[in-house]
Image (cartoon, rainbow, N blue to C red; front, side, top):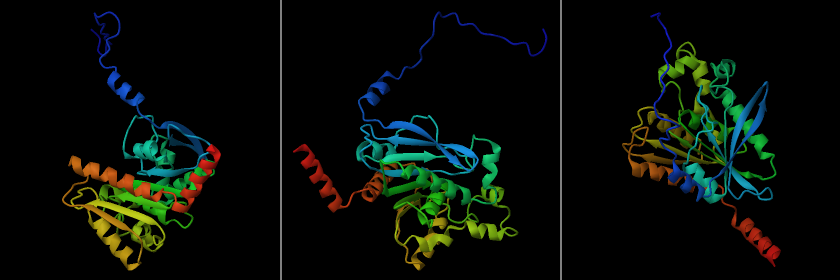
Length: 305
């Protein structure tokens, strides 16, 4: 028999065998106010990149909504996909009437090596620029409230979120960063040296990417930093050194720690607390001022009358 001969297995069972149809899951989802998922093409220089938009089930064009940008930005990472997921951000959409967006800019994966390698030795530069451009484009929609925009990211996404919040032309009112990278000299050398080079000969590149350069720009922002003290991936030293500089600059920030918890928050109670904390933070950030709320209620009463 010759080598590499293909073989085909034919089942003796007639028809198609259905292993799992997820009927219970379908019933549960159909009984809930799940977000509407849409996709929008965003032109960035010579590229056309995709944004994912999650809208409330009762979305109306005549109503204005706050926006939460979920950030990753890790080189080779991907935020926009058709994967089904339900998390705390879904709660913001369904229960608090927010719009959640995800966007993969330059440096993201699965869109060609040219796009991926754009961030080489320029970590944070194109990611910040592209995410700000995406926010600027979505903010022009008539249903977007430009005064209520926030962002969240973890690890590298926390680093990019901090850059976005502290940008000179930032549209963001608030931001939350979970275990953010603040100094790439303290992060995994395999990652840092791959994208920034060696620390000694490329010291200037590391200095430019250091988040402490932005410490003076958080005075008028709502900034939440969350960090487990036993984080083995992004050591707590990142946050400790960064907040020292924030204090020196009299910056406005809130620190939330999880004592003795690792990077992945193994305790179920801790994960629930984190989700609720994020929901509470952004719900407060997106809350309309009392005066505006009262005027809105009065207008609705007049229309009904």
